[in-house]
Image (cartoon, rainbow, N blue to C red; front, side, top):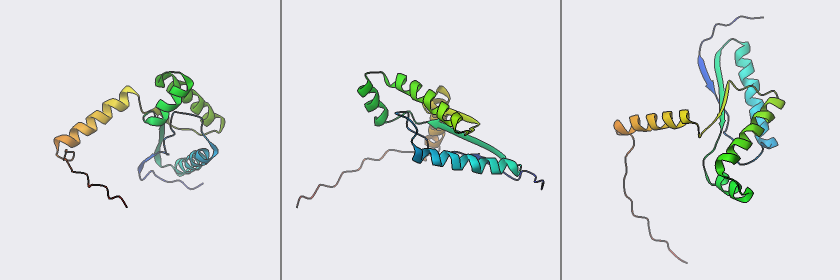
Length: 135
């Protein structure tokens, strides 16, 4: 086998699934393909990290939780367990699979936002919406 020296530090992720229901086949194909790519990178001895998370923000979670009569946090916890099991069953091996509502995610999102705002990359600006034309 050829030996390669890691030339890059590579971070790989896939689209984050919503935490409102099971992984469907269309999404699963992406995770399998990405896992194959990561395994190849490791095979050629690249320094790679494969991460992903449940997307726990947005209307789909609120709507599904309301339909089930549970709090969004309970839906998120239930779906997370289901997703982790599905990935394990299909031998998809993330280095880290987490959730976007974690304390760490909030900390780093706030940190990055704050630093960007301090440097003037984020600002507010009021705009007047154009009036709608009716036919």
